Length: 295
Ligand SMILES: *[C@@H]1O[C@H](CO)[C@@H](O)[C@H](O)[C@H]1NC(C)=O
Ligand SMILES: *[C@@H]1O[C@H](CO)[C@@H](O)[C@H](O)[C@H]1NC(C)=O
Image 1 (spheres, rainbow, N blue to C red):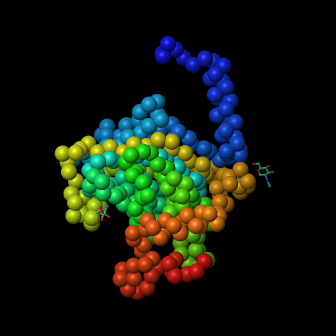
Image 2: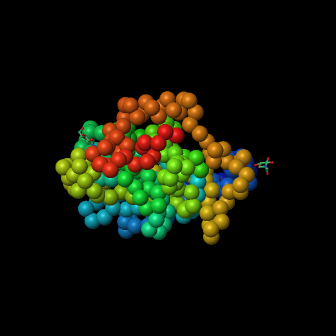
């Protein structure tokens, strides 16, 4: 019976429910990518080390001594709320980096980065984040996580709208990059970005600053992905799917409420291990503008 096709009426019911949901979520203009890796991404490198499984519900990337692997979204976005569930390389993952980021093209690119730096068994991963605007980064913040990211899937999200970029872990904001164009800090707002992810070897710097090398006897290293969701303005041929009417796109104006602010402060106090805005040694000429201006 497993090979029989779905019952026609349950199929049309399913299609009806999906249609209703996408209308509900999207208004009439916004495109929602939700949950099929065959439709949403291309595996771009790794010679078979990246795989789409379970009818498109799961994607895995792997790394061995010869190569890592990676994928990218088929679509480009200009503003959106992007979610992905990731289960990171378990066991001794020292030296490996799982990168998950949005990036535009060209030499003056914008980029919003999550990078997960592996570690020895039982030692904590580091979540490394950065924001590039017009080709300039140097805005690292690093965190420990409050759970073991290799035991289960967890949701890593980016909210990107005209007011701010917010990084979330399981719905908890961990970092906010505000639009401070008013004081002269460039903000990502013109260049559409694609989602990328890759698993690669970075044992020259990743774990304890490069002291701990990748143990290739543990290879292949594998990270798993599911439930990709892009509630976003999709750009194709220079045209955005979003009209100026944002009422169907609540994330376009989404702010951090008092509870979000409180949770963000908690992460900053308890989980943050590096903040470029506190690194006065690194910026002898003075901290970057966005670190010093009150907004
Ligand atoms: C790895 O574990 C060590 C020891 O607990 C810790 O200092 C370091 O921050 C961890 N993460 C990385 C990526 O080095
Ligand atoms: C904006 O779109 C919503 C539906 O998504 C509609 O109800 C509303 O009338 C629209 N407003 C304008 C000004 O077009």
